[in-house]
Length: 181
Image 1 (cartoon, rainbow, N blue to C red):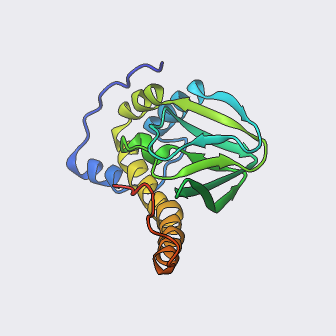
Image 2 (cartoon, one colour):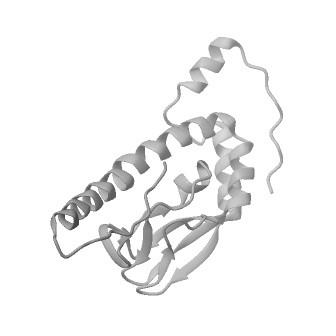
């Protein structure tokens, strides 16, 4: 656990400059403390090929930083798992779910053996709580990334397949999970 930073009083002008920041450097004390807190709480992890990391509607218990391996993201329709996005190396799983306290809207699975690091939910929230300025920027970036790179893409594929199913005469019922985010 990292020590809480000493509260510094900033003028309104200085606060506006900090809140409108889009990036940080190691010269920023709050960023440095935040990153040290994250790095101190990372734990190594390995997943095997074809392992389901997260099912639809599961609660995220950690943020996983994948360094090596291929992770697929998809959905389940009529008890059939379908994957439509693939991330090769370097991706993050669970940031949106933990940051906004949401359950998983999609499936996450390993296509190959996967290696990386994870930080537990309670440690992440504790670390972020100590850096409110970084938290604001982080939340914005996580939301935009999730909506553009995951939710938007998966929902396009899922809606396309649902429309195809609705046009078939041999399909009487469609069973799926609908994300509420």
